Length: 287
Picture 1: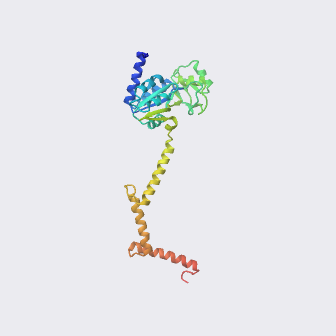
Picture 2: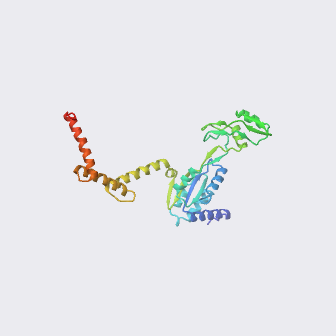
Picture 3: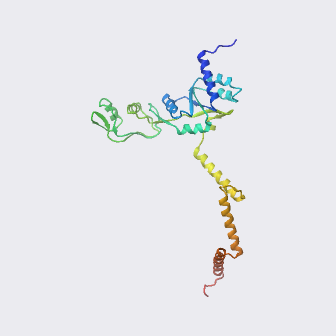
C-alpha cells in the first residue's frame, strides 16, 4: 500500500528537487548554535551567489531519491545527514564556498555565556540613552559616564572584555542596549556535493596561507627545472637566454676569444690569477 505524502511535504520535496536541478553544488551547515540573525546576515551578504534553505533531512532524502538517476551520488549525501541542517545551493565549487564563508563572518549580538572572539571596547561618545537606572549598569561594569544634553555619554573608550573571556549577562544586556554586536560568527560546512563527489568537513578545510606557500614553492621548482632543461616559455625565455649569455661569456673569457669585452675581462682575470700565484710563491711586487 502506497503511503500518501502530505501536500505540504510534497511541496517541500519539489522545492528541494528544483534547487538540486538548478545548481551545480549543495553544501550542508550544522545549525547547532547558529542564530537566526546569523543566517539573515549571510543571506544578505551572499545574495546572488548562494541560496539558503532550512528543511528536514527526511525531505532532502526523498528529493535525493527522486534524483538518484540524474545526480550520481546525491543519495550518499542524503544518507550522511544528521541533526538540524542548513542547505546551501550554489554554482560555486565547495572549496570556493568554504573560503567565501570563512571570509564572510558576521558580527552578532552577545548572549550571556558567549566567549569574546576579540577584545570588546565600548567607545566614548553619546549613547543616546536617557539618564535613569541604567546608569548603575554602566557603573557595575566600570564604564565612566557623564550626563550631557539629557543623554548618557561614555567618557572614554573602555575595554569591557578581553578576547577569550566569557560575557556576563549584565554585559550582554548593556551591549545590546548600545547596539554593539561584538561576536564574530560564521558558518562552517560539514558536507558538500558536486558532480557526483561527496566532500567532508576535513576535505573542505582549506589553509590559504599553507596553500599559497605550497603553490609558490611548486612554481619555483617548476621554473628552475624548465630553465635547466631549456624548456622555452614566455616566462623562462629571458632566464634561459640570460643563463646562456653568462655561460657563453665565461667560456669566451677562458678561451681568450678576441673581443674587446672579453679581452678586457680576460686580462683582468689573468692579472688576478697572476697576483694570487705570486703571493703563493712568495714574490714581492716590484721585487
